[in-house]
Amino acid sequence: MSAPKVEPATEGRARGIALVRAVSIVSAADRGAFAAVVCLFAVSGLGVAGLVLIGNQLLHELIAQGGAADVSGRTWWLVAAAIGVAGAVSFAGAAGAGMHRLLAERTVRYCAEVILRLAGQVPLREFDSPAFHDKLQRATRTGVQSAIPIAMAVPQLLGALVGSAGLAVGLAVVSPWLVPITLLASVPLWLAGKSNSQEMYSFSFGNTPGDRARFHIEHLTNERKSAPEVRAYRLAPYLLRRWSTLYDERIEGISALVRRFVRRSAVGSLVGSVVLGGVILLVLHFVRRGDLTLGSAATACVAVLLLANRSQQAATSLAQTMEHGLHLQDFVELRDRVEHFERAGRIRRASHPAEVEPLARLVVGDVSFSYPSAARPALDQVSFDIAAGEVIAIVGHNGSGKTTLAKLLCGLYEPTDGAVHWNDRPMSELAGDGGLSEVGVVFQDFGRYWFSAADNIAVGDIERNLDRAAIEDSAEQAGADDFLRRLPDGFDTPLGMEVEGGADLSVGQWQRVAIARVLFRNASFIVLDEPTASLDAEAEAALFETIEGLRAGRTVVLISHRFSTVRSADRILVLHDGRLVENGSHDELMALDGRYRRMYQLQSSAYVDS
Ligand SMILES: Nc1ncnc2c1ncn2[C@@H]1O[C@H](COP(=O)(O)OP(=O)(O)OP(=O)(O)O)[C@@H](O)[C@H]1O
Image 1 (cartoon, rainbow, N blue to C red):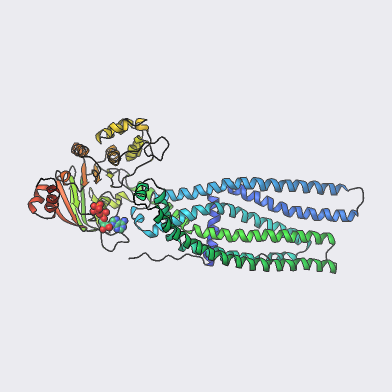
Image 2: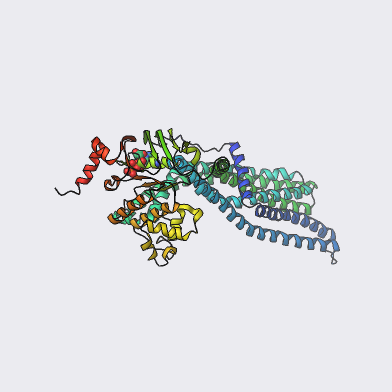
């Protein structure tokens, strides 16, 4: 089932909302800096209008004096006022530019933080949906990237509007008729800018999947994790070709847009200039008719040109702000969701204890689960229960649904049908969109954090972060203490070669750190998804001793393809194509002579000399 096609919203109302949205985001990022920048731009805009009016007075004063040697006191006052206002305009411009940088940085931070808060809270199932990734991509790349231009465009727009208003008042004092006609000159450019920004947004929206594919290739080429394979298969030229094709398509699309933009803007500028030429002719006409003095005509011409310039600036800033505001549509939707999650989280915390009771009984009742993009269910009417203290192994071929089941048991996915009950309470109600305090898990693809070795273990229960003795004890139980102590700074050594002074570990050593992490969590229910895949035989045996040692008061679910470790579990569940087909102890399943026995014999025969 393919995801419904999402269309960009660019109609008039959406553009109006986009404008409000852009203003609200910049002001939410830092109200103080926003107010200061707008005031500074307004002072600068009004100052220019003031200069025009002072200039007009000065001109009339000088003409009235007719070149007399003695300059009047009023003239000196006007000169002083002009110097003062010019100084204020220049200070406001410089200070505004400085504050602008701060506001831009705050806006980027605000947008990035919202996205971080969202990505850390959305239910795991969202990450299985391409539509969510498209949205996240647009919100991250375009939304955050738009933050700087928006932080620039919004105060500029408001400043240009105030400046235009001031100049319009100044011009109206000289000749009111000239104001509307001058403002008309900016309309063609505004129309051109509006169409341009609308097209640009639609293009960016439609190109999101292509952009994501391109970023994926950049990631593959730049990441240390994929670097060995890229070299072993000499993939770099191939990846570069794919990347180039994607980028060429983008550039081609943008080139076509730019050609249209230039044509539109040329027509807009031409029409605007003709209108402006008409205004100047009108001024000359007023002078001829004697309606305007020469001094007023000179002031009017300056005011007309300045007003045209400011209003065109306002029109361009308005179009840009709307375009960026449209880009922020996804961002704002995501921000609303963050608020929704945080509100829901507060409600949940208020109505349910954050900590759950230790596990007494876990019941999986008729559970089915389908991934959003998958044609058939990954789990199909699976039912079983687990009593406290049991060690349960889950086996099955690749893709049979083991990891999916593990995520459901941890409360990370909600079943599509059926329910998982933790001590008789629905897991989905308890877990919400996150994990439970009494659940610890090691996934196949566990996290490798660029933190110190100690912090890599402490993330298992971040509330106990400073409990160094417990961290070292967990490392010892997982067989990780020896090699961690031998690192240059012991447990304080950062893990990861990408970090300054960092040390890297082998895959098996990383796996032991991940196991130490779950042991540190000290949960009553532990899920281990392929915890021994990269462990040597000795470490694997040691881990199972640890698991045996952990049994008291703990329940363990172990997913493994290694039957040597599976056989000692209390009970073994066999999954096949998402269905639970066998459930019993090793001896019971061997006696059953079914799928488990065949898999076990296939693996054990590989070790027996023929
Ligand atoms: N995010 C996903 N979106 C769509 N389908 C998925 C997703 N993850 C897994 N699947 C599908 O769900 C089924 C079960 O996958 P799962 O990872 O649970 O299998 P598994 O038994 O853990 O496999 P393995 O032994 O290879 O780890 C597979 O058919 C897989 O293709």
